[in-house]
Image 1 (cartoon, rainbow, N blue to C red):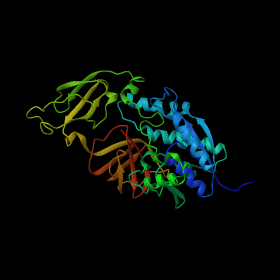
Image 2 (tube, rainbow, N blue to C red; image 1 turned 60 degrees about the horizontal axis):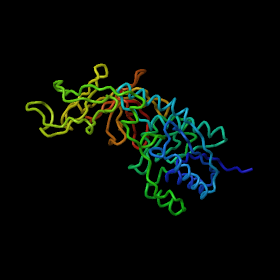
Image 3 (cartoon, rainbow, N blue to C red; image 1 turned 180 degrees about the vertical axis):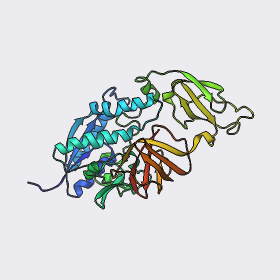
Image 4 (cartoon, one colour; image 1 turned 60 degrees about the vertical axis):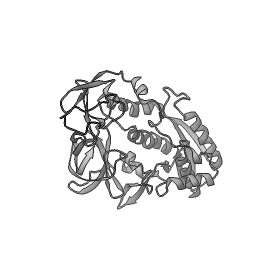
Length: 366
C-alpha cells in the first residue's frame, strides 16, 4: 500500500489549477482531480463554459495521468452563496461573491468531500500562500503581487488552512504558463476566467433583473437634492460608479464639487426613498472617508488582531495596501481608521487587514 500523501486538487479547466496538479505530482503526492459543477440555472453555451472546462480538465488529467471526480455542489452554491448574493444586492450593498464562494464552496463543501474520500490535503490554483508559524497557520500574500488572491481567502480558518496547499505561492503567472506549455498542457494559453464565481461572465444587469425586479427611481445631486435623472434600480449601482448613469451635462454655476465638465459618480443610496445620490468630480469630499465600520468579522488566527497598531488594509480587491489602525473590535464589528482618506468605500465589499505579507482577516464594510 502506498504511503504517499493524497491531495485532491480542484481543477477548473484553467492553467493555474492544472499547473498546481502538475507541481504536486512532481513533488511526489498522490494527486486526484476534482471538477466542481456549481451552477445549473441557465447553463447555456452563450454564457456558461462548464462543458468546455470539463473537456479541458479531462485532457489535462490524461496528460498528467491522474483520476478526476466530477461533483455537483449546485444546491450548496444556491443556498450558501447565491441566496446571500441576492440578499445583499436587495439591501443596497455590493457583495463580493468570490469571498463567499471560497469560504462556503471551495474550502467547505469541496474540502469536506475531499476529506471523506480520504484526502490528506486539498489544493487549488489560487495565488496565495500558507505556512505554519508559532503553532498557528498563516495565510500569506503570493509572490506575484499582481495576481495575489489572499484578499478573497481572508475567511479561511485554522482548520481549513491546515488541510490546504497553494502550489503557486512563489510563482509568477508567466512562469505558470511556461510550465504548462513545457508539460504539453493545451490550456497553457487559455484565457483567465472572469465574471461571477462559477456563473461566468454575462450581462450583469440582465442577469440580476431575472432574480430581483427592477424599481425605477430618482437620481439626485447629493449637494442640493436636485433631480438629475432616473435610475432603473438601486441594485444596479455601486458607490464610486461612473459609467451607466446617463446624466451627462454641465455642472450649474456655483455648485460645490468638481469643474464644469467633470464626471458624475454614485455617492450614496436611500433605500427607503429609492433615491440614488450622485456627486460631480472624482475628488468630491463625499467620496473620501478615513474611517469605516465592518461586521461579519473573520480572523485567520481565530482571534482579532490587537487594536491601535499599524497595519495595512485593502477596502477593495484592486485598491493599494493602505496604512491603518484597528480602533475598536467588539461584538458589533470593528472600526478601522486609515492614515489617508480612502476613495468610494462601498458597503458589502470586504476590507482585508494585513501585517506585511500576512493576511490577518477582515470583515464586510457596513
